[in-house]
Amino acid sequence: MTSLLTRQLPLLLLTAAVYYLAAEPSHLHWYLPSGLLFAALWLLPPRYRAALVLGGIAARTLRGHLAGGWESVPEFVLGNVPQPLICLMGVLLLLHWRVAPQMLGTLQGMARLLVVAVATAALITAGNIAFMLVHPVWSPSLEYAMTVTLGDFLGILLVAPLAAWLVSPDNRSGSARIPAEVLVWIVPVVITFVLLARWQDGTAVGEMLRLLLLGALVLSAMRHGWRGAALSAAMVSTAVALERPLDAWTDNTVWMQLFVAVAGSMALLLGASVDSLRRHARELEDRQVALQRAHGKQQELVREVRLASERNLRAEERARREVAHELHDEVGQTLTALQTHVKLIEPVFAQVDRIDMARRIADLTVAMRRSLGGLLETLQPVALDELGLYGAIDSGPIRAMMEDAGVDFELQLQGEARLIGQLDELVRTAVYRVVQEATTNVVRHARASRCLVRLRLGRRDEQLWLFLDIRDDGRGFPAPLRRGLGLQGMQDRYRALGGVLLIASSSAGMRLHGLLRQPLGEEPALEGLPD
Picture (cartoon, rainbow, N blue to C red):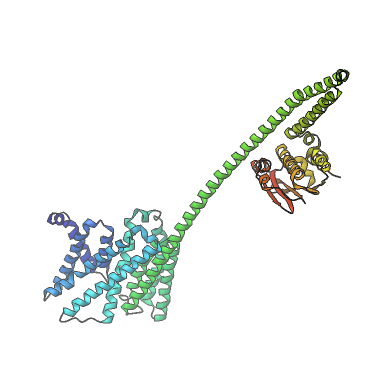
């Protein structure tokens, strides 16, 4: 302990000197030693606290000795020891609340600093009153208690925020322009106040000019946050402190102290709130930028997935066409040859009384050709290429199937009908296959008497929108079919093209609603449209 104090002796002596010199010019308006000691105990490393407290006690001891000394040990202890220790207790409470210098930029941090400053000032006053009670000459009064309490509070209020600003790198960041901008407009206000305090009489004028100072504090807090408020509060406090030596409007020290204490506290709290709002606004803006970037990446991924899906669909359609061509060229020609040979050998079968067998073979060949035709239609809708989307649905195999099943089939084309010729091949194929699958299910499972297919085309947001609506008056689809590969495949095809397909089935019938979009191109050519 002795070696530690020896190493920190220069700091102890420096603290005592600063404390002593700061006490000399201290007006009752403020008491700077309390603010300086509080700020040093708060901002310097903990290992220096003993030297700081002892330096404060040494300075108070020297001042007391030069003022006439003490008549007893209790007077010595109460006159010199409590004030530095109470400052240390206030700092420990502030640290217990986890208020670091950079926390002053928050409303909670600034409020806790002011609460600790009030508590510290009140306890220091209690120590001074205890000293006066044991002193044979002095007697405490309410005005004295208020003056001393407000003086210590203002010392902490004015010094601690400025010191935290200077010491903390986080607080200094981005604050280089604040002193110059504050001084540019606050100095003229202070000078005007001082000049009028010197040459004008009247309490009304003084009250009006104090409101001017208050307005300057508020403006500084709004523009520069708590740091601007701390600097302006120090200058405004200096201006108010000059009222008494200039024989200005008031001799009431408590009133001056209250004005600076309330105005300064309000400005610091307002400045901290402004800084918090600005910080939250920046954080919100950063989050919005991050969200926009994430959304952009997500949209890019969606676009890439959609393009990949479109490539897969195009590859699937090419594969279907190739398979269809192969089946048509190979199997179709084989079936044709088989039919020809059956015709040629019919007389042979007749000679051996087996003509019925030849006819059965011919019938099987016809059934195989019919099945092949249906398979080719599924793989490559020839009607879609030859008649277009509207014509393929209205005049192709779909209507033939519905009429053969005795279903009243109706196709409606609504909206901007000319746009149907602008539909991309994948879109036309997807819509056709959905109609094909849905009408097949109507024939096979719904037991419907009527089926309506409605196509509606329009423009929106530089895109071509195609709405598909299919409905019947049947009994709906059984639950296993709703989960079958056919309906699921329809939804997957729409989803791959960036669209949506909703299917509902109940006892009132089937309802299918689909939407596909594609970029608008040039003015479309007309295909087979209704009159």
